[in-house]
Image 1 (cartoon, rainbow, N blue to C red):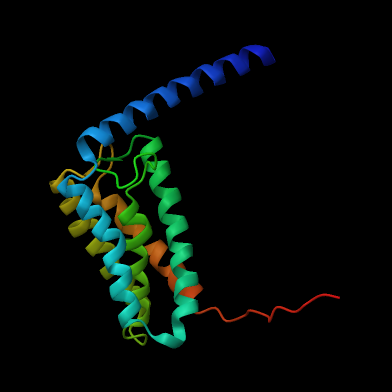
Image 2 (cartoon, one colour):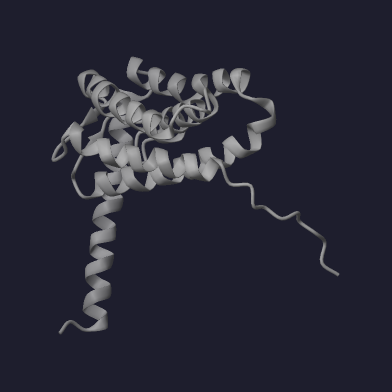
Length: 188
């Protein structure tokens, strides 16, 4: 059994290796990715969909939809980090080099698309929208970003994303329908 000191030494050595690799990644990003066409595309995809959504959103549903969007962002970022760290896929042309996920995908494209689908035609069966979204994301968006060279599915198939995207959408839909919030009061 390893001693506490040995465990600390191994963890610190691993951490130093990670820091060295991150430094190298930032250097490569600065020299080759920053201000490239795909970097600018990522910046645009991070901002423009939110502007469009802000214009077309249902004003009286803004808070509820933003609440849902933050939930979606959290799930997307955590899922993407896990997929990246376990070698299922990786991204190139990061907007922000130290974030292992593709910022526009997790922070803008997925949440904005989902909350837009939630607010448009709210009487359509959510399962239909979930399947539509999952097929769109899995068989159009993922292959497109792969073709561009931004996304590389190492040990992942597009079909694996379909059930996950359906679950993500349905959970976001359910969350968007919640209205059990009490008013905040000042405690004395």
